[in-house]
Length: 260
Image (tube, rainbow, N blue to C red; front, side):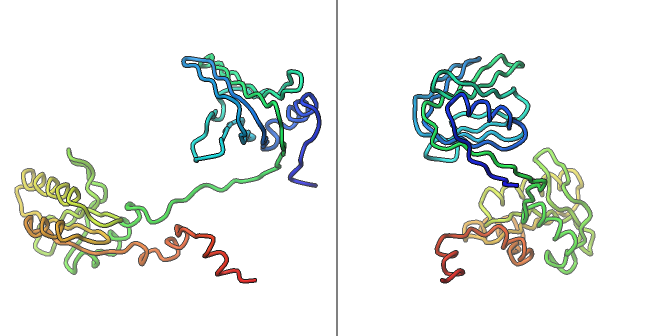
């Protein structure tokens, strides 16, 4: 059974075929269209070559020839999508009962209409976040220092959540701020607020540690002023397989790795 089918016919014939496939397959229409939106606000999109994608859950995206932001869109469950014909014009319309809004996309020329029997149960996993790095440091405290013992993750303060809190062998509190990228002066100032807060509340000695991929001389100067410790950690080295999944590849990379 073919999973991708190109539909052909008059506007009326296409509307009938698309109505039969609606909610069963992903529908892609490439053609010259205009769009009219009527609701709390009104908009009119003049004619142009556009790409319309309607998914099985009736989410809808209308793209122009440039950029990643859609010209019109509808999220899943917002309204039923209908296909009809007005003379030689193919009309894709939706009514959103909750907001009383309507969207009409009118194709005066259809270059290609395709249905795709797609199946995708996977979910997006984002690797190498600051939270991942904090978890790793909690399990490998020796990276922070030989006498660091972590006690708490995501400790809430009036100034935000502390990534790591722990103690040293002398019982002093250690506050660790974790940054995936190179540290900025704002990161050093944020750590200073955390340290000051705990000194006021706990009335004990508190040390600050800033973990980042790099430190400018300006940031290092601030850390010396505050008597904080910088620790350089590259998350790509800690999660090498995950870092590979996040790499950006160019056409040159493809051709270099796939010689004729």
